[in-house]
Amino acid sequence: MSLQLSSRQVAERTQAVVEDLAQLEGPLLPILHEVQKEFGCVPEEALRTIAEALNLSRAEVHGVASFYHDFRKEPAGRHVLKICRAEACQSMGGDALADGVRSALGIDWHETTPDGRVTLEPVYCLGLCSCAPAAMLDGELHGRLDETAIRELVKETGR
Image (cartoon, rainbow, N blue to C red; front, side, top):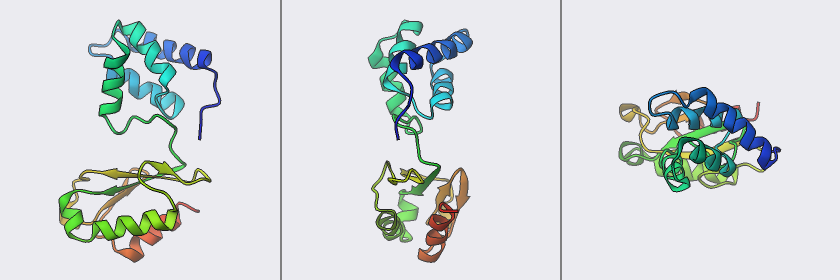
């Protein structure tokens, strides 16, 4: 999936976001969040505009955007499925569960199905260690998953 906006349009809309939030203390993260809300991702063109407006280097802005996994370079699919990859989930069969989902969707981590239905992401702890293995579908937590339960979650994305 790609943005259907020109570089100029991205820069103009990003500039508007920056003007709204630049007065905040430590405005970079709020600006990145708002840009992602606006475009569904943080486009490269936006990084340049943000850097210039905040008098930061592009490397500094890129460093922050790339450090936080929730900032995307491309818009996500209609559904985002995050599967916990932390130790507790791995010890409870999370690896096999994740392999099954990747196989069923035909995609790997950080990829979106060709129809734009699901983006699959690894996450390192959802805070459900006592209910491992766990996943999150569109912000909703699911624990004690097994093959049947995760298959139902994937099925939900098709509805």
